[in-house]
Image (cartoon, rainbow, N blue to C red):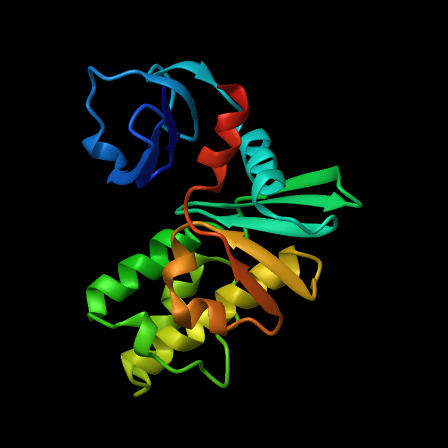
Length: 211
């Protein structure tokens, strides 16, 4: 079976026959191909069975996290989503387009534009007071025009995004995260709490419950 988490920018795929995982850009999805089970912003008319993103996220979290009480936040290109469990039971979820708006997309865009390596950058001592990824770009370019290096301004921007996500979690002491930013060392180190990255296939793992 073909399982797919079809996000705004990237589609995460699991082929159960080949036991193979892969990631492609969503615009590269073969328009003639139909997934067996899928979730995500771009899965309309591309799958036989569509599963709600938060349901897939919760089921994936349950599969991957062994602790009975936790919060998982998925940081996508255009929004952030969270699921919570207490004593092994699902207790709630949230979906935020405001403080998480375009967070993943903007961080990737800035990295590509300025040619920075997030895995080699130092965490900023200060953060930009930003409300979301999009609005924060104006503040970032203001700092650069004031003479701050792009690398330092970007690090401050990333720390501001991390602060917003920590607030979104209710200032949890420990947060599991999923999404492409799991591969961004600067982002992970910019939090003031413990971060446990789970990678990019959490929702795909959740879809396995429907096989």
